[in-house]
Length: 380
Image (tube, rainbow, N blue to C red):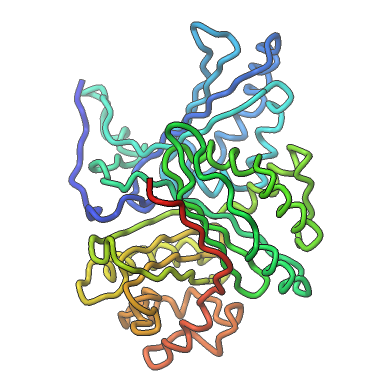
């Protein structure tokens, strides 16, 4: 047996990226209803051919616990994280897995980049077609980042902003290992983005927040104003809404500069031309690394969130963002500006045209989202 390895090209200051080209292993734990084991096996066999046809899918396995016959596991392997995320956050995914729903009490999903693996010495060159491995471990800050986004009826924007600006923060402690550290809400036009930072288990934190009475009251107050109807008392309706609202964090870069000092957080909205969302997210991730790595830049951390043709960046700056609009926008280089001009939907942003180096302050004003709330947990 041999162990494959590689040389890293990801900077140490990047604790999260889906753009390193590495393969992904997804682990889905299932707690099924006792007595439905045969039905679960039949449902899996009916859906596995459809999942196998999804772009980027390599393989999967269905496993049953040796000790507890109601504990099942589905593991799948994907060529890259962007391909998996595009499928996982789609209505197509929900439709494919629906045959399992009647037999499952609960699920827990975990996603991993593949670091190393053992392989047969004579596996041959075809083994490389399975995709790359993550070259080395990334060093993180023990935080998980996630966002959701949705649109409200245009004539409801003012009322929704008032609702979201005045809600009571939920209890930050989820359990002994998980805390809700920060929740930031922003508005652009009639689009809402809610970004959260969690220490510990993201799914446990999301379930905890959803159960809080103050959060439930806010969600009920929002329902009449949403462009997409939902019924949060119906598990299927809630699952559909939050699957389509998911705005995954795809890249995060941070710097020691400004650590412990005062920083200002802003959110930036980048609508892409049809089909250009993935390329725009990669561009902004690459340029964000450069701005954080520049000692003269005010940007101390930034996170790229992406799905379909929507990209949002959360940026922490030492000082006002207006002092360095090019660095804050991650469009400070001529080549980046030119590429962004081809990828961005400037009209959807409300701008007169693509960004250029003379109008970056104005473009920053167009892209900047209105902050509604920014709640941080007290230091533990």
